[in-house]
Image (cartoon, rainbow, N blue to C red; front, side):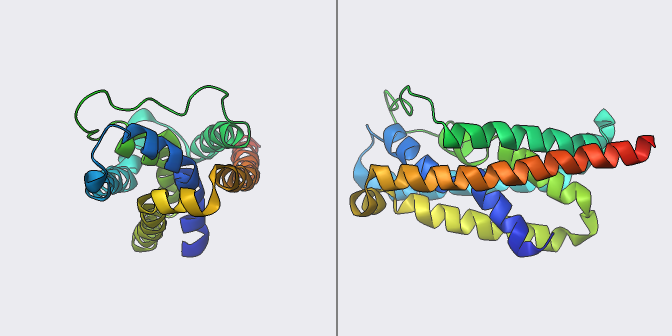
Amino acid sequence: MTVFSAAMLLFLVMDPFGNIPLFMTALGNVDRRRHTRIIVREMIIALLVLCAFLFTGQYLLRLLQISGPALTAAGGVVLLLIAIRMVFPQTGGLGEPVSSGEPFVVPLAIPYVAGPSAMAAVLLIMNREPGRWPEWLAALGLAWLVSGIIISMSGPLVRLLGTKVLIAIERLMGMLLVAVAIQMLMTGVAQFMGRAG
């Protein structure tokens, strides 16, 4: 896995286009002049959480005695579930606006950006080749930066592209993530069968 492919995987998992309506809904009752500041703060919190998982995840796996193939297969399953929700979104609402005050950590940083799938992805990437941690950190930073730029431009993007185009982009990203998830699942099973054999 290259830095670019790792960054692309993390970018797909962070799903910035799918998060645009969620962020806008969560910030519905907050002064618009504070939106950018809140988004920047929440993105920084999400980055810190993902960095923590990147560097401590392998020790957690050892503590729980989870093997590499099991993590790969589990990561594939989690990503597949996320991808299916991206391709076939729920018919219900996209979220509820915060009733009072402004959101802090939940739900913007966690789970919208640093959700279970993103945490599983950084665990998986780091577990494969821990010695390449500077590359994985760079990949995480790149995916985070692009996602943050897209989310911070949520208002203009909705006005420019429209909701239907954003939904189409999210579903396309979901289709790509389905392929990545199936490949991860197949790799995990193949590794397990190789060990068992």
